[in-house]
Image (cartoon, rainbow, N blue to C red; front, side, top):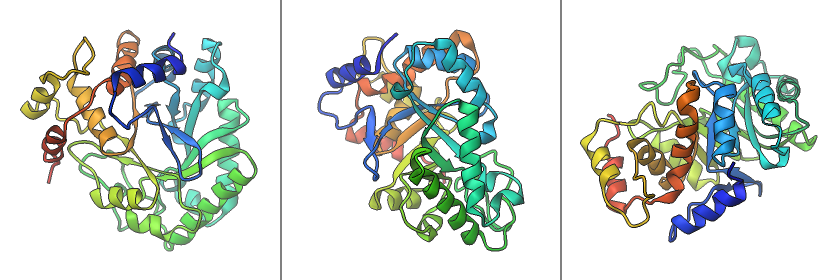
Length: 317
């Protein structure tokens, strides 16, 4: 099994000249994994986690909504040799992804959710916890990139800014109590981020792929010290594009001996846009380990400026 130290050494050796590393520094001073194993949408912890840890991965992204926090705890326990300090666990509270009651303007809801996640995960602290989605009025779309999202709708709230502020205050309290090290949000657009009270979120996790992303919110986050994290990069990866295929096949001195895949091009594009990534490895035990190695292999090569421009131009209208 590759240790994180070994992976970091590999990154330093194979990505010379690149400023991208396995960690990103947050605005609260803590470090965040550049790529995390996403357990959403068909991924299974029992399948994905062994291969992820074995390939040198250490960041795990989940949510209380996914109903797999206990499965993650079980999978980590079965591995047996992984120290908690060598892992980075991100989870989310329901907020705007649940029923209207989850969007009540009550900070205690957030604290209670944090405590439930601690129990589910069998840990004494959580590295990062996010508000899963902003509470919104019923007339709004629930996703900032609805063309790629399978989300069905937000909670209908009369005064969503009050609810978002209260839930955010609950996460702030949870951090002060030492239950969580860093706090952030997910699926917030620029206006919703600006409406939150201090402190500024450390992370904003949003759907982002070559085919679809909210450039306004991305720019807002990067201008205000908020790390933008992509999910859904594979859902919007144009695998059959001749542009992506040509870039994957292009010779490059720092490429790994096995070459670069189209999936790696899509993930590396996100890294070079200055964002972190949450990506799954599927539910097939026969391929999850290989996908984990493939995902972590994006530190071993670099896209040129011209290639980045070509990929940026593939965004859907």
